[in-house]
Length: 224
Image (tube, rainbow, N blue to C red; front, side, top):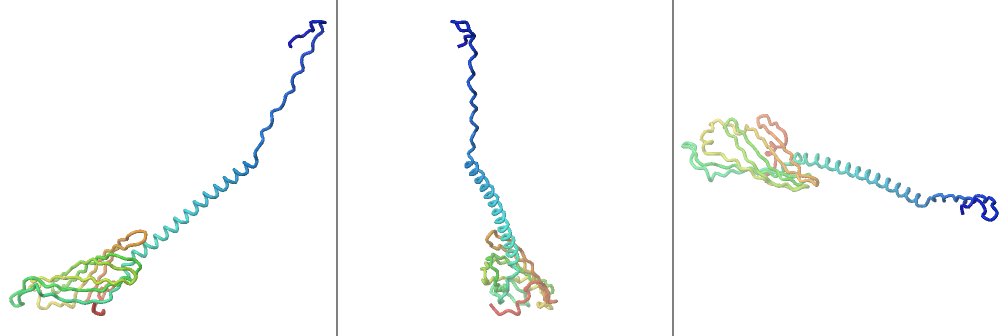
């Protein structure tokens, strides 16, 4: 190797023929794996997109349900209905006579039947204020009671105290048929998604027989 002339005869030795170049084999593509990968990617993309759409739809359905419940719950106190009414007066803590004056106090009890036709249970707190302008009396009392859903009826009893001093200062011409009444209500309405706290304000004026709500309808109700 590498000798240019024959050492015996001196003839030139032709250069060696180069080894033929063997081309490198072309890379083979595994079309089956590529197809599987493409299908998996497509399934993944479609699945993620479908899940996102489903989640968005579910979120909208849930929000709609919450909004509907909120609207219904906040209107539920306006559906409460009076079913009966009765009153009584306790004079056991009052002493004296009108001529010489009274001491102590008398208590007037008023009981209402209150029906709840809504589908919500609620805790109600009512404050009723009675104003007799000609007598100079302003009587007020608050009571908290539970209202069961779907026709449940509660019977809150309100106690209005009239002191001996109020009786002593009452004008002889006081007209107790003329009065104004207000009912302020606060509620905890129990829903599936939240507890709601609406309020109500009802009024009644006996002089004009006007107001909002059914606060002045006690005379037309049966006794409790």
